[in-house]
Image 1 (cartoon, rainbow, N blue to C red):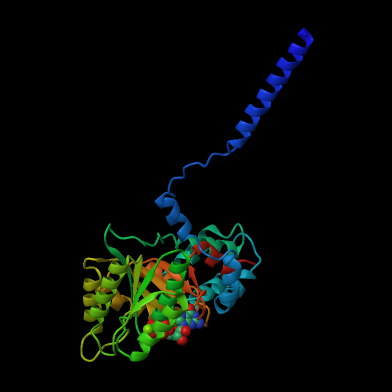
Image 2: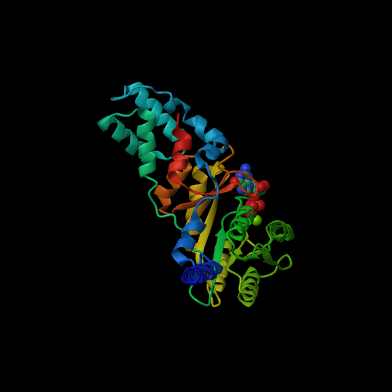
Amino acid sequence: MIVALIVMAVLVLVGAAVLVRRRRRAVPMLAPVAREAMPEVLVAEVAQRPVLVDETQFLESRLGSSRSIFDRVRTISSIGSLSQDQLDTVEEVLLRSDVGVATTAAILDDLRENGAPDGVAAAVRDALLASLGADRSVTTTAEPGRVPVWLFVGVNGVGKTTTIGKLAQRHVSEGRSVVLAAGDTFRAAASEQLQQWADRTGADIVRAAEGADPGSVVHDALGRAAARGADIVLADTAGRRANSTNLLDELSKIRRVADRDPGQVVETFMVLDATTGQNALSQAREFLAAASVTGIVLTKLDGTARGGIVVAIERELAIPVKFVGVGEGVGDLIVFDPKAFVDSLLDA
Ligand SMILES: Nc1nc2c(ncn2[C@@H]2O[C@H](COP(=O)(O)OP(=O)(O)O)[C@@H](O)[C@H]2O)c(=O)[nH]1
Ligand SMILES: [Mg+2]
């Protein structure tokens, strides 16, 4: 009897234990954790990282003509002090590469004085890299309640519209909604060209008839962007005079409109064609006065350009090169990275 009671008691206990364990199991092992929104700063960091994985390799394949200018520097094998012949070669190569007289002289002085303990290519690479130390960050946000505007200026044919198309793609792929302002009303074909980029990238566009006031196109684009809660406006401009109005006056006016509530100009990019070499510099100076330029987009570095122009531009104008164009395709625009760039010219 007692034995039977003990057996029953044990059975009841075991049963209770099993039930309790089942209950426990029914509770999910991992309760969902309340997640906080990703901090802004982290989002900005991720957004700014270049899309391409191996930039140096990609650049090397695109910068063929710039790279070949440096062939003769890459093949100087001596280490330590340089002969006069070798110094002459370096000087000639640097001048041909478009880095400019001042930078060339500074690098030559350094080579004469300190030699090239790690080889000539390494010394030139270090010197070029040292002169490309500007802050290249880009702003994609405006004050609360205002729409950030990126304005693009530059003479006809340098690649403004193409650059805007490529950047629209970049913004869209980073999750921003984009409105394009077809502010080049000089020719109908210009806004048609921008329309094609809008179609291709999924960006919204505001355009007007040929000859329309570019300021009002930008104004309308801002209205549209504000109404739709768009994240950014990219504004194209004409690269030549419309009738008798002065182009630079017109640009100042467009800028004022773009910077008026609800808009805020957070970047003004001057687009320069790298294949025009030192001419790009004199063009740039004219524009600098009219528009407060915050960055340069250097296009066509893939063509017959000589890459050293990047160094000359930054030195002479004291404005950072922020993007470079290396082809006509939508993916052929990269965030300018000095190290990848210099490596692509001088790596063995
Ligand atoms: N090879 C090459 N061609 C480019 C690049 N950027 C623009 N282009 C070409 O340059 C020409 C003029 O460009 P466009 O955007 O119309 O210049 P815009 O007048 O300043 O707007 C077009 O044929 C573009 O395809 C580039 O980075 N590399
Ligand atoms: Mg254009």
